[in-house]
Amino acid sequence: MSDRTIDPKAPPGDPASRIARPLIAVLRILAGAGLVAMIVMTIVDVIGRGLLGTPLSGVVDMVEFAMAWTTFLGFALAFAGGAHIGLEAVDGVVSERTLTVLRMMARIVSAAVMACMAWLGWTEFLDKLDWGDRTIDLNIPLTWYWAAVVTGFALSAVFVLFGITMRTGGEAEPGQ
Image 1 (cartoon, helix red, strand yellow):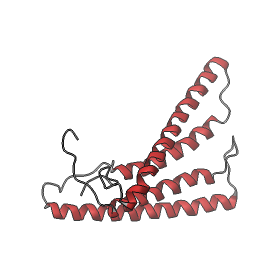
Image 2: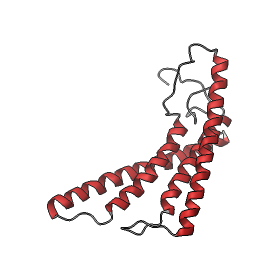
Image 3: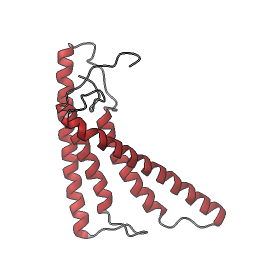
Image 4: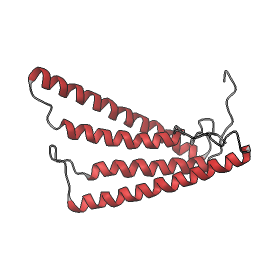
């Protein structure tokens, strides 16, 4: 079993793979656009303050909004690519079969935790929706920030589940 959640070498006909690959491509574009937006807004704000003596109006709200979406989409991408820090304390001590079982258990626990976090985010989303909370500068509904939390955690859980259900390919030979 590969350590990657969504194995790029999985058979293209695999149903989870058909869903995951285009979704990952879209998430990469959105997360990258959010990162670029934060950089540009911050640079424009600094230049505006330094040269013109006036800040970009609402820049804090805009950067926070972009940061929330970029961060939580990044969580999902990390789960999709299996790009987490892992502790390999037992790798050399237990059998390959035991290691495979431990990795599967870790994926199941990860999916459950991500699903719980998505649920908790959803309750906060509904709370902000009921109260009508908004940002001070641009009057952006706080539900959009919580939507990022829910989306990121829910997609993380989905990608972990895809990794559990997908058939995974072997390692590529050098030069392939």
